Structures are given as C-alpha cells and as structure tokens.
Image 1 (cartoon, one colour):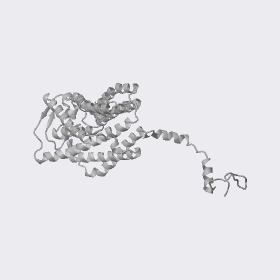
Image 2 (image 1 turned 180 degrees about the vertical axis):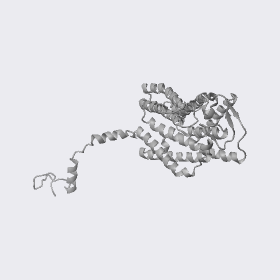
Image 3 (image 1 turned 90 degrees about the horizontal axis):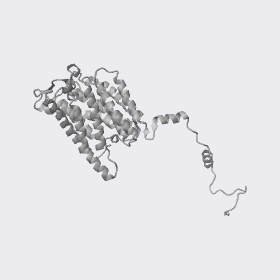
Image 4 (image 1 turned 90 degrees about the vertical axis):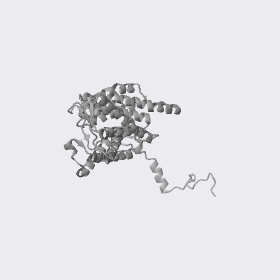
Amino acid sequence: MIPENASTPAGHPVDSQETTPETLLQTETSTIPPVPEPAETRFLKWMIFGRDGLRVGWSAALFLFLTVLFMIILAAVTSAFLDKSQSKANQLSPTTALANEAIQFVAILGAVAICARIERRRILEYNLTGSRKALHFTSGLLAGIVALTILIGALYWGEWIHFGPVALSGGQILGFGAVWGAVFLLTGFVEEGSVRCYLQFTLTRGIDFWWALGLVGAMCLCGLLQKGDGIWGVYLISVLGLIPCLWLHLSKSESAGFWQAAWATSTFFGFIHTGNGGENWIGIFAAAAIGFVFCVSIRLTGSAWWAIGFHASWDWAQTFFFGTADSGLVAQGHYLSTNPVGKTLWSGGTDGPEGSLLIVPLIVLIQLGLIVVHGRKASIKSASTGVQPQLS
C-alpha cells in the first residue's frame, strides 16, 4: 500500500489515472488550437444561411426554379396525351385543363417538398396549419360562389351581360360540373399554395421594405417590355402599396414583414396574370387586389384554407356555372351561357366579369366581410390569450 503523499522513484507524485498512449494523444490534440475558417468560407455561409437557415431570397429563388423545371419536365412527358384543340377554338377543354392543373400541382408539391426538407420544415407549416381548417375552407367555398353571383347580378342589372340558353342538360350537368370542380380545386391549391402559402410564408420571415420595393420595382420594369394595357394593373397595385408599407417600415411595426410580403406577392400574382391573352388592366388589378384580400384572410384565420376555398369556387362559378369568359377563354361544357354587352369598362369584354370595373367595389365588400366575420373572432381570441390582435 502506497501512502497518500508517496512519490515514485523518480520523485514525482503518483498519478491516480494510468497514463496510456491514448490519453497522451488526447492531451496533445486538445492543446492544438482550432484552425479558423477562411474568410471566403465564412462570407459564403453568411451569404447563403441566416439565423433561420437558408436565406429568404435563396429559398424563394430555389422554389421558383424547381417549380418551373418540374413543369417543363412533366409537360414534355405528358404533351403527347394532351388535347390541343382548345387553341384552335379559343375554348378551354376540361380534360386539357385538368391535365395542366395536375401537372402544376405535382410540380409545386415537389418543389415545396424539396424546399421544406432543406429548411427542415413540414409542408403544412407554410400557412396551412391553424385551427378549424375544414370550416374555413367550407366558408371560403360559399363566399366565392356568393361573391361571383353578386357580381353577375350587378352586371345583369346594368344590362352589361345577357343570358342565353342553357348549354347542358341531364347527366351532362353533373359530369362537367364534377370535372370542372376538380380542375378549379387544383387551381386553388396551385395558385394559393405557391403564392399565399410558400412565397408569403417565406418572404414574411425575412423581407423588409427595401427588398419588397426592389421586387415590386423589378416587376414593373419587366412590364415595360410587355404589350397591351394589362400591365397598368400591376403599376396601380404597386403604387397603392408603397405608402402603407413605407409607413410600417418607418414606424418599425412588428407586422411590417407580413404586409410587405403581401405587397410583393400580390403584385406578383397580378404580374403573372399578364401572360393571359384576354386580360385588361382592370382584370390584372383585380387579380392583385384579391390576392391581397387572400393575404388578409391568412392573417385573420391563421391559414390559407379560406383563400383556397374562395379561389376554387369563384373560378368554378364563373367558368362552369355562369359560362362567362375567363381571361379570354370560354370553357367547353359550361351550364349557362352569357355574353358581355356594352362598354368593356363595365361588361369586362373578353376578360369576363373580372375585367369589369364593378369588381373593384366587390373586392372592397369582400375585404370588409372578412374583417367583420373573422376579425372579431381574432380579436376575441387575442384578448383571451393576452396578445395583440393579428390585424394591424
């Protein structure tokens, strides 16, 4: 037994742990200072990643790139099976429309899935969570049909639209109605899923006024290269959003990011509609304005489900039930037949009801209805939880 203060023959105290080659290697390694990363590597990481992971600009760009890439690939694969007769007759075939929407849906779903994996998020986190999703979706479906019926009624009252004979009968009504229902349900998921779900959610987490202004300005500059007056709808929504977003920026509002993202995505939604052949500037502005209303619905209900339902039923009622033109195209297999009459400013002309000036007060009514119905519920919920209301 060795006493506590005993020493080794060499005069050194006894180590309580046995010295081995492994411990010597660990000791030598721990004394080596870490090698600092090169400045180029640190700068590259800073450019690509932020505190929330992949930076907003790269996320949005990657999503758009993947969406377009997948659409091109899927369209090339399925082109041999699509009916191209619609371009000759200037009519929208239900089978072709269903195939096109299915291609876009799969492409967007694939792009979101990849981006979600990179960002370590679930797909539903992109403005598809929240409570009472089924109720919000159903109420959106009802609101879309009611709103379009009000617009058609106003056009009929002003004698800017005339009804023709019923185009379908019997089982054709159910058959075409179901197919067009599937088409526009996919349309709701495609357009709302890409703009109000992924892009709105992504831009909200990192955009500021100057980035929003840059995006909106870039779209306006691109519009200078386009022919026709449709781009003036983009210019109008850009100007209307400028002062409110600047005020939110200067006041350092906590909700500024959401509304600046809404300004950018709504302008983008109007901008992409300029590619439709029959759109006028009122129709483009209406698309951008209703896009902003959909952003407000996300803020009030907590998800995009109301917007998806409204979008789907509005298009279904317009295209199938009333049989009006939609961006210059009339659907094959519509229930009622209608024709615009009088000045395009009021009738909408080839654009359809969305190109009529009457849609502007209707969008205001839809916005007010959203605030009355869902804004009060949001305020009550916020008061009960002790947080500020979502609508600023």
